[in-house]
Image 1 (cartoon, chains in turn cyan, blue):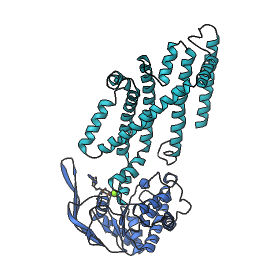
Image 2: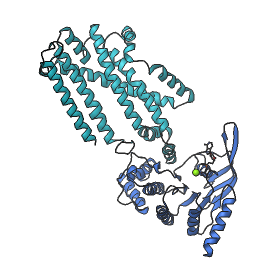
Image 3: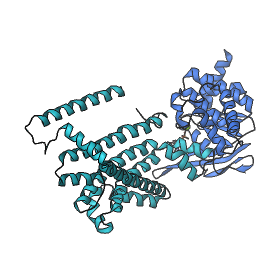
Image 4: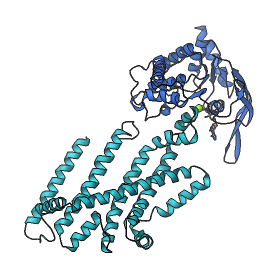
Length: 258
Length: 232
Ligand SMILES: Nc1ncnc2c1ncn2[C@@H]1O[C@H](COP(=O)(O)OP(=O)(O)O)[C@@H](O)[C@H]1O
Ligand SMILES: [Mg+2]
């Protein structure tokens, strides 16, 4: 079932690639606007051999991992704080209500004002994109933990802290994973946008910046090469990494409908 | 062993307060099975939760082995009706071993494992040690929950309609398993049910009459059915 879906996806990707190539080779559009697959591939190979595309990709991934890590720790801390008392819970919920709807990129001008256009600013934006969806899902997950689990935990003698670690966190894993999926998607988009803006104001580094730079050189194939890398990473994380994590945890344990 | 004296408990629904338990007194001796019979909603679960220390009575006292029950302890284990009382991210064996580990029973993992296996064997769950709870049938889940409870070697099991969601045949086999385990371990059991037939079977096997909480109508019905059955 899953497998057939995947094969169908591959067939469609193949058809789309052929359509692309036909359009590019038809001679009706300038290769400066619409490069052929061969040109994109060549640009990609060239950029990889040259080392630039690879190092920019690593630069972006390192930043995103840093942001995800900090964001996740903050989310856990705030989720725990919100469980400590009624008023702290309401404080955390207020923070979520205020900050969650705010796209990270909208904060950019202010962050540049505060932190400049360096790495710290991008990390800040990623933390912002990651923190709120994760926190929201963690809190929802904690609340959705069946009462019988915590009863069992209390019965065998777990104290509040261990109860949280051993019962509430594993029980809210389905929420945690979907929180990470949203967080990842937002962080990745925010990162690329921020890098592009920083490219415009003279920063350096990252895939977004790479695309921006290729535009300056009118290297259309190079721009598409970077887009392909962005897509590949997205697919790799969303369809392979998260998929694996789910198969090894919540699906193995029957904690999901699928 | 466990002793209740004039236990009262009320809940508030909106502004109104309503009494769920009023002036309940009884005691259970070591190694005894007490079957509590009562209609749905009469306060059986409330009473068990009080006895387990999950909640406190408004007035009256509950004492276990002479000391007041104030919080849940591994010495009196509640077994629920819900099939999802096992932790889904642990295998059957891990579900039994984990509480042992938390309570520092035995030094080595090997010993804990042997201990857990002994109780899984007692409830007839051989061959399912490494299954996850979602791979088990309802009856097997309840068996595993029973094994987890027994493995802690508590003084008392508080069973809240543990077989209430099972089909008649499975229920019967679980009742047998329960009575056999009771025989082997000598644990005291408070067995709550709303099912008159179940109360009859448990009580008949242990030569005790169930005690009723809630309306006395239910007990009258029990007596009536019991007499009819005995005459046959
Ligand atoms: N935490 C609670 N808050 C308010 N009412 C409750 C609570 N727990 C139980 N009740 C009420 O107390 C009554 C007895 O419930 P329960 O003990 O679950 O009955 P039983 O287990 O015999 O079916 C019911 O009317 C139920 O609605
Ligand atoms: Mg009940």
